[in-house]
Image (cartoon, rainbow, N blue to C red; front, top):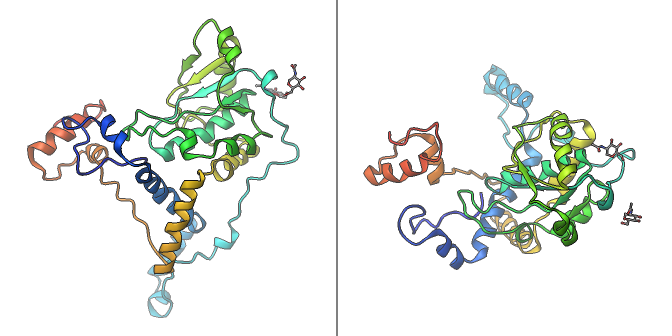
Length: 311
Ligand SMILES: *[C@@H]1O[C@H](CO)[C@@H](O)[C@H](O)[C@H]1NC(C)=O
Ligand SMILES: *[C@@H]1O[C@H](CO)[C@@H](O)[C@H](O)[C@H]1NC(C)=O
């Protein structure tokens, strides 16, 4: 997600440099886009159909009984009233390790679109917790396909993020100056394998963190397993559903959009086609745009070793 390329301008190869073009774009364009997708996701999260639900609906659809008298209601799930939030911390969950006794400062490099970055930030909080580290407010990815230069505080309410999680993890906006000055080397950077277990962080990351005082985990997306104990999963939920709150300007715009949609109809469907250059390149298909398309998608395909550049 993030700021979408302006369709009236070429977004790669030739033309105005993306950086120059970006500077002149008003930020509401970005806010609107971010909101559309995340807003819609949150609107529908209450109505996610489970696999069990789905196979039940399908088998009923196949049965005669449904065909004869009972219409399918796609807007309702029989089990939706059984879904509930479970993010509350248990009383036994120990409090955050304070900054001065933490094992060091953990930085992460986020990666991908805003949603992917959000997942990375969520996991970073849990990893900081596992390591008893102080988390430094993550910087957002400015180098992904979107070339979005928004900072964390442009998108999320940073003070709320820090204070909401203060019982769980100590978070600071930056490494304190004295600590930076006392370090003889720059923070160590390393990359965790995908879906790493907590043991990986304790065995491989913690010793370096403690030796260097600050460590950055690069390209931090999907680096933490889903096999976590329940309290850590709940922490994930606290981060994602409570701590990562959009800034007021984004919330206000979102509420306005939802009000407009509700005034038009009580039901709406959102479809994210993602018909965008990098996705087209990824698909490996030819879309009939002639040599120009081949050239442009070929350029993007070069970034992935596994994709043929020319089809
Ligand atoms: C750590 O900081 C807290 C205040 O945040 C202070 O009460 C405590 O004494 C400090 N501990 C150490 C070991 O410096
Ligand atoms: C983190 O701190 C808690 C409480 O002080 C301690 O029990 C735990 O072993 C520590 N874990 C690590 C990885 O330092």
